[in-house]
Amino acid sequence: MTRTEARIAVRTALTDHFREYGQWVENLGQEVPIAALSARINKRVSVDAFEEALRVMQRRYKFDNDTTYAPDGDRGKDRRKLEEELTEHINNIAGSGPKGEK
Image (tube, rainbow, N blue to C red; front, side, top):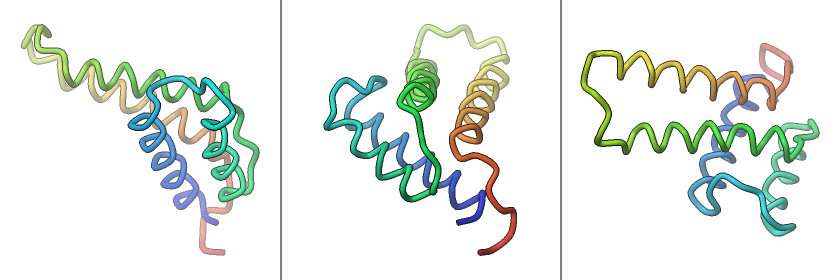
C-alpha cells in the first residue's frame, strides 16, 4: 500500500467512525474499525492517536456549523488551519510508507 492509499484509508476510517460514534472511542466494539485499519495499512494505529484526530474532526465540524462566527474574512484561513492540523494527524497515523506503487 502506498502512502497515498494509506492516507485515504485513514481519512475514510476517521470519517466513518466520527459519523457513527462521535469523537471518542468508548468501548471495545468501537476499537474494531481501528484494528481493521491497522491491518489494512500494515501499521499499528493507537487509539490515542485516532482519538486525537477525531477531536480535530469535532472542532472542524463545530466550526463548519457555527452560525455565530464573525464574517471578517478570516473564516477561510481558520478552516484551512483546521484542515492542515487534521492532515498532519492523518499523516502521523498513516506513517511513511513507500511513495510509489507496490
